[in-house]
Amino acid sequence: MTSRRHFTTQAAGALLASALPRLARADAKSFPFAEFEQRIARKDFRGITKDVLPTPCMVVDIDLFDKNLKTMAAYAKSVSINLRPHLKVHKSVDVAKRQVALGAIGVTTATIAESELMSNAGIKGVLWTKQPGGTNNLIRAINLTRRDPTFMFVIDDPVVVDNVEQAAAAGKVKCRVAVCVNAGLTRQGIENGKPALELAQRIHNSKHITLEGFMAYSGKASHTHGFETRRKQSETDLAGVNESVALAKKAGLPVNIISGGSTGTYNMDKQLGLTELECGSYVFMDSVYRKVGGKDNDHIYTDFENSMTVLVSVDSKRHAGQVTTDYGNKALARQTDEVKNKPWLKVDTQGAEYGLLRWSDSGGNEIKIGDRFDIFCSNLDMSTNCYDRYYIAKGDQIVDVWPIMGRSGAAQR
Ligand SMILES: Cc1ncc(COP(=O)(O)O)c(C=O)c1O
Image (cartoon, rainbow, N blue to C red; front, top):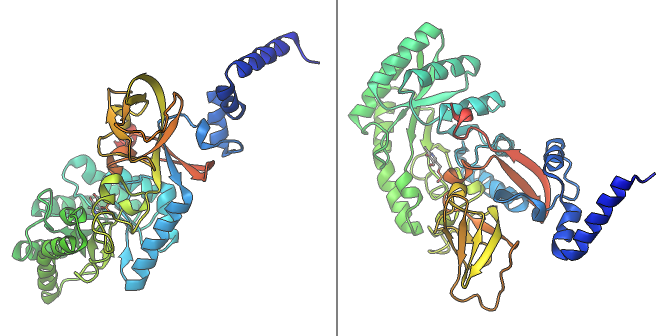
């Protein structure tokens, strides 16, 4: 029997629906927040389409994403170079597992927390591209080596070699280490040639460390505009690395890996001597990368698709030529972001929770309160760090949710 209370609620709902036809349509598909979260937790995505997602949020176009993964995997296979993709851009076990399923030999990480997360999730062949400079990281690197002997990290300083040797001896483990050499960036990497050789020898002679080879990340080359200019930059940046590798081989040292490379240089680094690629951004791409140009187009990099967008909503419209969105500073809005399929709209911010979309000529298009837009963010590493999940979409339908892990805060410690 229908109770009076139920009836009254239904009647009120019907009244609201007729008064607000646009909201009512959305309401037919949306849920109270708690139920939405329960549905997400159960992976029950019936009726969950992009238009009912809480914004701002990250949405991955699964078809474009799959295409990107397959393009990179096929390229690596075709030239016989290994792929150990960097996960700082996605921080997702789900993405990493898909990369491994397509042939990646492991993953590359920026932090010990990311390394632990991936290893604990069963990903083998984690390469941490920073050295354990402090005690906390050192002990964790030793402990992770004990749990997962496939874990590797890099060192660019003799002091760290000695610290690792001491800690590894005390912990009764043998660490796997690559020499981090300079490849154009001043942030890390020992000088190539004699200093790199001596560091490699010191590592090789350490009882509790195995020398794996070299790591040389050319971050300057990755975003150099124009294919030919980029190739030249990569060649310059990797020249010293090849010298160090040659010296090491001549001295009889093992060189199992020469790791480096990026999304921007993936199709040039094999010829320049790398044995494995650490590309990361290719999975989603961002608006800044999109502009570096490729082999066929000097202005737009079309090798990989922009498969991830931040979905944002219009909240207010009180001034000509602009609307306020929910995509502000806290959501990592940037002037270099782009609005998908709407080049006449410019992105800006108006505060922590307030974003701005501006235009000088809308070409007759009208923007209304409640409208939603897909934004290509400027820098994946930074943006990914502010969101806690990817909604995976097939067209407009949400088909999965992947958590973003190892972000700042508790997960990073
Ligand atoms: C050490 C290292 N390797 C590889 C990459 C991946 O580069 P990209 O995202 O340009 O492919 C990065 C990115 O910052 C990096 O720091």
